[in-house]
Amino acid sequence: MQLIAIKNGYYLRPSSSSRTGSFSSVIIVLLIMGIIIGLVVAGFFAMGQIAGTSSEGVDVLVQVSGNDVLITLIADGHANPITGLRVSVDGYAPSDANSSLQNPQMGTPIQFAGVAKDVTGYAFIIVDAEFLDGTQRVIKYARMRFS
Image (cartoon, rainbow, N blue to C red; front, side):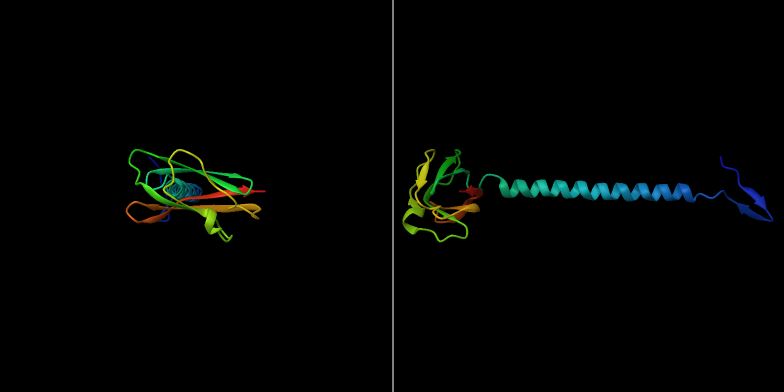
C-alpha cells in the first residue's frame, strides 16, 4: 500500500516518471521484436513457396559443364507427364536447335549442348516444361556461375 502525503488540501504523489518511462520503452522494444519476428516468419514462408519443388511434382537438377547445360528430371509418383522441355539462359538468345527436346526421359541427365556458349559470370538458367494436358510452366529458375 502506498501512502500519499496531504499538504494544503492537495494530495501529493511521488513522481513516477521513471517507472512510466521504463514501462513505455519496454513496450516499444517488445513491439519492435514482434514486428521483426513476424517479418522473418513471413520471409521464410515466402521462400518456401518460391523455392520449393514445382507444383507439378517434378524436381529439376541443373548442372553446367563448359558450354553445355545438363538437366535431370526427378518425378515423384504423382507427376504430370512432361512432353516437352526447353532450356534457356536469361539474357542470352537461345539456340533453338539445341535448347528444346520432346519427350524427355525422367531420371537420366539430358545434355543441352552449346546453350551456355559465350555466357560468363552469373546468370539464370530457365527450364520450361510442356505437360501432357497442354500447359506450359517454368519448372526451374536457377542462378548458376559460368566461366
